[in-house]
Length: 281
Image (cartoon, rainbow, N blue to C red; front, side):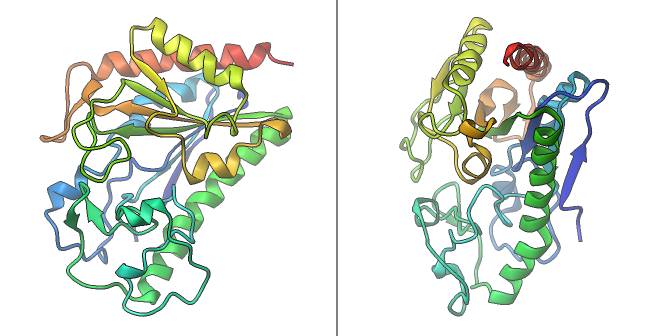
């Protein structure tokens, strides 16, 4: 079994800042059994997002990253967001397929690139439960622990859920096929998962660096920020999506020269976030 989750502890003085990268995993379990082109599966990865944000460790942040691919099982989905069309028998537990399952990208993905079936078969309840037990549960346990430890130490915690997105939407995207996207999209579930001034601060800093930025358009944040964002309790969670055109060739699945500039800018942004947090009571 591949390593389900990696945790990097802060270097130097810890800060109440936790980053997680749930979709950058690229170790495909042997029992995946996908029938589609492996190159298509790789396009679902938030490739190198954990590396892009890697400078945060030296600034006192903790980072949690998945080792497994999101198409195998998606940690940014609720366990109930199960697509019954994937299963060879009824699911024995609670099930509530949502919009993501309807578009083929629920807890277990059914489609890639909005239209290509991943499997040529239906999955058994046993193999789906095994994916939950071996990958989804350990990922959330590690993230819960990192967030709770920071909160216990500092009385507050600021969490960044780190993602990347295709440069344009596809046929089943929330924003439609071919729609160009901003460089950064910040998601706080319409102001419910973190303090408004935190979202505003990040948006202003990103814009000052010369990037285009949108808030909650087209992505508001899904399961992870929902689970951890309780600003009234001092638990703040913000999703940040990076446009892949900033740092990679999506078709070739390769870094481009601008990778290092974006990486440096994200380290600068993290330094600014740590200073922002330190100024708060």
